[in-house]
Image (cartoon, rainbow, N blue to C red; front, side, top):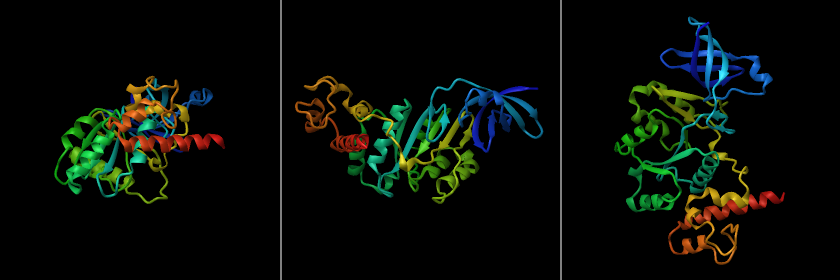
Length: 295
């Protein structure tokens, strides 16, 4: 039996679909040894497979290679980065949701790129404020307009040869971006486009799409109800990069930058060094987490 290395791109009902470069997709079962060790293969896992039939493209997963990271929701491994897309105006961007997403990716130590799309719909003053509000969050920010062909080269460069979790509400132009960035993959992004614009109650399977070469994109399901409760209220401050340089400069050790006097972060907000919008989102999230802890 021939042994090959590939990446799990989809898992349904005990079958795993493994993409092997230049050989295609193999339908595989996982060996019982994983069940015994209580290891469940995840979409995104790099695996070794034994080929059962080259004609029928079937095989068995014999080994799961070490993971560099894994997410619980969606259940996926080995993501290089996340790219979150928001429209600049229509639909109106939800900055609270964007900040929750940044916290979750920061918690999982996954680099995030923010893409404000449809910049042709909004005047430059509004766009500049959005960029300024998030300029300290630690993520790369890209602005794009498929209509005006702006930002497409930068997005292509960001996605190239990486596995990217693509997130964002429906209607923000994710599939249009992919079709502009990788025109040669139009047919494949058609599948993604269908998933992105699906009805609310469609059954979802996490799936990674091979766009071209070593470039993979994961359409991130369940994105609108991000559960960031894994973060403790007192630790939330560590996931807002804007606060980092002020850590330890407040009057009180362990200052959470909400109600304490002589707080360096609050002073930075007043001085315009930290975005008021981001600070308000932080205090709202902090209070929400704190109140949940009580029950």
